[in-house]
Length: 394
Image (spheres, rainbow, N blue to C red):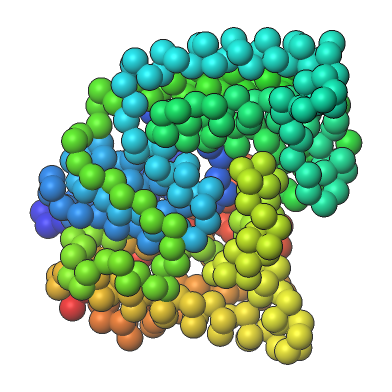
């Protein structure tokens, strides 16, 4: 049985499988593909020591699987939070540095206890901790939550070990939407919440301890291979050499579906990114619902959104083709969606674009998405299925 037949006989829905093992559950991320997909593709189309590329790496699922399977990997994403999460998920940390986390948590807890009894931590004389300030912060974060987040962030900044510091920042980022007044992890709407005092710290403490436990196991199981992460644009991979990639496994942004900038906006603020940077990032997002909606309305033409997406993906696929070796496989996973009630046949669009970039379609599969999975299912896009497209570089 050849590799294509092996995949053809597989179940792609992966019902009732564990998808958050090891470091995969470090941070929520919308529309991420389940790890079973990159695992199966890497197992089928690569061998140990090959180089796997994900030019839209998101939270790094493909790189984690490559690291476990003994393949070198390269992840690229335009969003710095995605790059931070990915870097942390694939960077093994030994037991000794992880042992320092208990002291860090004790120091944070002591400072938070003091903050509820001593205003001088923030207001008297030179403050030890400074609450971040951004537009409408009081609308989105209760005052005591702001103080607890500031104390946690301030203590993380004192960590000297860069890998351990980034590890803590991912735990910090992972709780921010939960303690904000955002309706949910993936819905940018303001609601009234009652976050109890010290709840922010409790969530951070639980997350950090859980991540440490998972990292200990990951460090034992992962292979000694490279995993490089670049904060860059998939439309311009000029830092990668021609013909240097053995396999591409990726899930490009879905058209007219997600606004990653909105979902991660407060996380980026609390990680010290400026409003100007975040706005610029929003304008560069491929497939962004808000960006495409603005263009479509300005032109009074729904086709503008599709044409914009096609242009962006043409550039990205052209770069993937350039860096792939002849004969290399490229697996893309993307969801169907709708624009003004009309189905967008994104699979046909991508197949046509890929053909023009010297990729030949070898096989395709349909994944049915569980409608209860809110992280991949939003009303205006109505994503019900994912297309798994397998191309070969010719």
